[in-house]
Length: 212
Image (tube, rainbow, N blue to C red; front, side, top):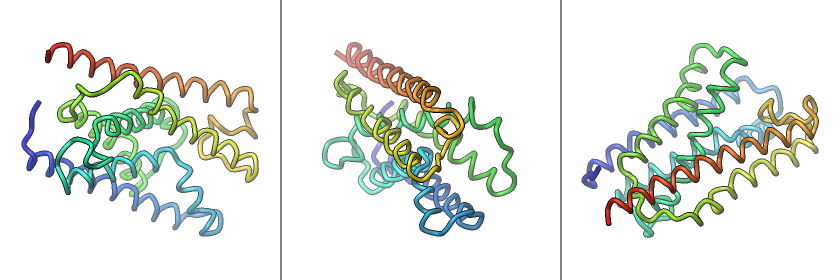
C-alpha cells in the first residue's frame, strides 16, 4: 500500500506519541515504586527488553514524523532497521502474552501502561510495517545483523545478573532456574527471533518477485 508523505507523517507521529508516553509513564511508575536506589532503579529500567524496543520504535516513528521518507538518508527510516525493530517488538508482545501476562495482574495506570508497551505498540508496529514499510530491499544477510541486538542483550543481562543478582525477567533468572535452564530459554528466544527474521525477509522476497 502506497501512502503520501503527509499520511506517513501523521501515522508515525501517532506511533511516536504512544511509544514515548508509554515509556515515560513506565519510568515514572518504576521510580515511584522503586525498591532500590535511584541510580540502580534507572539502570534496571533500561535492562528491560520491552523498554529498549519501545524506545527504538519511538525513535523510528519520531524520525519518520519529521522526515516521512523511507531510505538511507536517515538510519531509523531504513526498511532494514524498521523491519528489525518490528521483529523485536513483536517478540516483546508474544513473550508477554504467552509467558509474562499470567504472572501478575497490574491495576490502574500500570495496567494501561502495560497494555501500551506490550500489546498496543507491538500491534501498531506490525500493522505499520505491513502497510507502509518498503520490503523489496530486504535481503537474507539482514537476518544476521538483526540477531546481533537480542544476542548482545542476553549476554549483557546475564553478565550483569551474575554480578548484581538482578535479572529483569523470570525466564533468565539464573539464581532460580540455573544456567542450564536459562541457556535453554535463551536459545528458544533466539530461535524465535530467527524464525520471525526469516519470515520478514521471505515476505520481502515474495513482494519483490511479484513486483518484477
